[in-house]
Length: 98
Length: 394
Image (tube, rainbow over all chains, first blue to last red; front, side, top):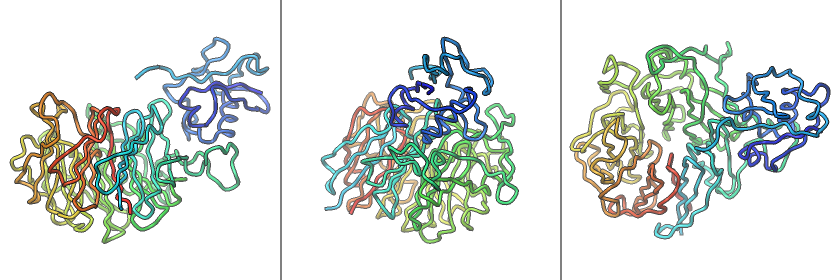
């Protein structure tokens, strides 16, 4: 079970709390985690990554275990601590306020 | 007794203001979609309890919301609240998907448009500026978007298809963004001809289709814009808003960047009617629902000073279809007022007397229940108002 922490506005959209848990079959990568999030919470399609290109929206960033994974390839394997559920995968707004 | 429901989109959420037919006491329901920009909300003329909202964010993109109970509860079309799995056949998550149609069968190539510096820039979807439910088909709704294009949904907002004939008109490389972006902000459906639609884009101008959206023609003859290389060009004008009284569909009124104009031939040509306005820069324009020659504007000081002149908030009314204007000030601040009123932030109801409503960048929503003779602030301190629509309820 992969733990994913969402920014506040996406929690509201998906009617969930701060953290959701998703199952990922096979390799646990940036894209497979987001695929699983969008499958379970289809109202989030297009809000984290573009509908068509699947590119990360420019003002969002991805973190795990203190590492910034935002610029990594979508096929990048996430740290083992995320795979085991010890650490969450974080989706964070790149800038705050406003 | 009949009543009204005022739909207010702001920079930080949506607000719904309701009153009975007297329009003196108001209930305020708020905020919906807290923290998000709500560019526009509009109810279906066929089913007033169906309301669409454009919820948008620089972080999270475009969300379409729909209510089928008059704004009490909301959901993304095709994605009911509380359901986290996709039922067969339901296009969940598709309601937010606006993809320009570049297919060889129905689409047009994705070209470029003019950027602020005159260079060409790729067409990119950013947000929905305006939503216009159909006058005749309950599940059909139109959306005007940035970068400028017109989309239509025939399933209540679950899926959207571009009417690509507009973007593919051929003049796209001459279109350019206004200060707020290159948005298609005005959609007017002709009640006397379901195939006739008017739209307007900043800064391209006004266009009309007479075949349901397949082909379009620019309708900017008579417009003169000194801020573009050819002041009388076919396209490139920064049209801020266009209004029509549904009882007289052939007559249109326009607030351009500068200049207020009218057309008596469905947009084929325009005549300036700025007359004695203190300044003819502005954004909003609307028409009295029972008197088609009575129109309203709110003059703004200039294109570089987006606030009302002289610190006075004055709606100007013409009862002669333009040229001869009177300031309406009763109940409006007449000192130290420096607000703006954006293009989609004025609306009229159909009660007798006609109600007029507008919202300001300072978060006030003003209402007049006597066609503009007097005004009251329904609310004083909302976030900056982006849009105001009103529904007259049975």
